Image (cartoon, rainbow, N blue to C red; front, side):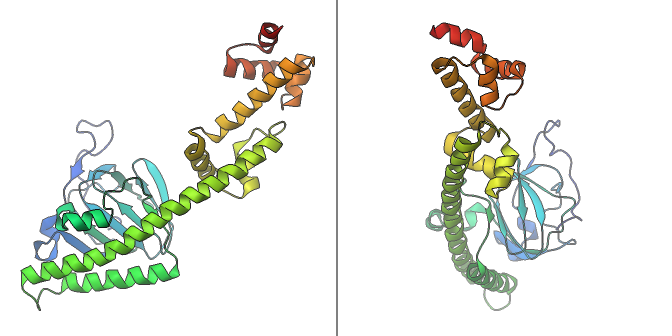
Length: 302
């Protein structure tokens, strides 16, 4: 699955055909049912025309459970890094791209949206695009998911013991059980991410309040708090709609205005008090964020 699928034409942003959309490959399913499940490996082909290493869109669900990693995968123009035991859930309509340098090892489940009844679709949150595509099950959740997927794969491959209609019904029931577990994991992951984001933003806000006179570096705050810069950006944006740099700059500008308005400190000393030893750099920074020079701002208040 990682590298031997033939590349089709188009699929690149800005190309003549734009980003191509690929339907569920019913012809590759056992018995022509609306799902597939099997191992991810180099020789697996899940759609003969999909350009794996270029951006493309799918109109079906893909769930990948990784046995190895790290694997980098782009979904809706955001990069995700999955490790052994992680899952990626790509929903219909989302664009994605496989990494040409990653080894995709594990189990992949694909399914047509119409394969399950509406009640199951609603109960399992198949169209909850607000939930994170990258899931990190704990050991117990992972064991249960592996067992569900293994059972689903056995049912999928067993076409000899039941007529097609019953075989399809059994597959739907087994798939529903798997998806209910996935839905619970996705919902709990979304809540955990929200709580972590709230907590991280609070820590960041407090750190900025203490450190802004001398520290204007997003990376330095991330290192101090023990989080990656990317995680910090997500948390601050979720809480405020701003970038961490924008949040820091806003606090620095507020302090500059306070000092200019309520003290007689020279402009150079005001700049030095908020981390700008060079008065010219402070003036440029202040003008960039307020549209006024520090002198003009102070003069308006006289």
